[in-house]
Length: 585
Image 1 (tube, rainbow, N blue to C red):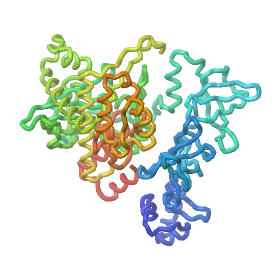
Image 2 (cartoon, rainbow, N blue to C red):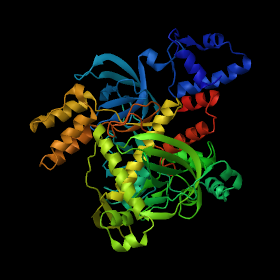
Image 3 (cartoon, helix red, strand yellow):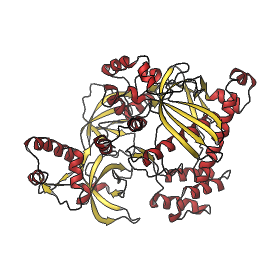
Image 4 (spheres, one colour):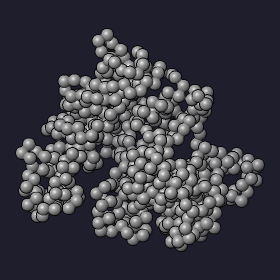
């Protein structure tokens, strides 16, 4: 008896809501099984996977005109429910029907038999399952009789009342962190307690601390996690090497920014009769970070490494992220290799996925590669003379891959980016353009192709993974976009929202005065990319299959993909294990 078997039973078409005793009888549970069942059904109800009716009968939300998901609030006061099930429609919730739900909360919504003017169903929050934010950052406003904190995030629509008598010295207008002690409902706003005072807006270094607090970022690793990391820092055994394909004699490089310490990926290239053999070799983090270990649980909480202006908050302890997992030049490292044979049209004709042991020849920077390929700098070309031919071949292949992707309709907004330079105190002293050179584009093209290859392989093998999906714009977003496009003589038909159509529009406005405005409006009309357990495609990349495989040191979803792929390669993704992964995706 487990969660999935209970849910599977309730998913049957013939199922009708049953009381607790009726379920025990229907499932033919003995005394020991009932004890476990009692805990599971309570847990499922608490997490919103099942619902108990007023008559104390249990069923699935979708069978009771209910929907579960994340509520996204607008500063105008209404909310949009984004359902957990991607097959369900988003639901509009009026402010009067939020019933105390705050932006980002996981909620249960009852669907009404009413629709907005654009056809979106309306609903009402009947339960908050999980609160997204127990602490918020905002501006302290002192009043005669009461004081409030106005959240910085305009989507947090409630002012938070603060009782007088805080032990912290806080002045009117200070940026503060406030812990919510009483949640809002229909009759009252939330109440809170000030937990941190950042000071006046503009204080050097304050913005970074606010970002850390706003997003609940974890700065320090628990001692137990650090101790576990130290134990893992051991040389690779001969026994482990024997289980893998030995690629230590294959010439390969890493290409990253100057400051990068966590080197996830290395690349190799050869010319073959069919075209090119591209090797994308990714750090085998799953070998070290075992499921449910202390490091794994901490990595799950962090989700990703966070790169701030002057510091990095890594997902993994530095002994792993900068040490044994990082593909440092001249050191033996464990990897998972995606070896692809690609023809002159950019198509993957054949590929192999396997566990490997590698040794990177050189740690290259984007700057050095760009000097070779863009500037043809003689000094740099001489320094890396043994690798110049490889870089030329990489550029040749990357250009082909990019053209193939563009032919499918992949979008490239190419907005200019900037890099802020700060001094030792955190005060900004310069802003420089952060340009994307040939070196950056080579790695981007190679990683995208590897991610597509792995995603398609996993889909064909019918194993459960997290896909990175990006769906086409919905009708409401497209309508708003067309309002602007019509002013300039453009229009996108609702039934023809394909990547090629959007790509054609972006090409037509290239270099015109309206390009910045239209490009930004097109970008805003796009849905956010997200992780789901279904291969729904990636609109922006014009990819049928896409996942994140290439950055397991700094992204937890990549680590999940690695775990599943490793089990598949070892022939262990079968039976109950497959079902277990499927239920947790």
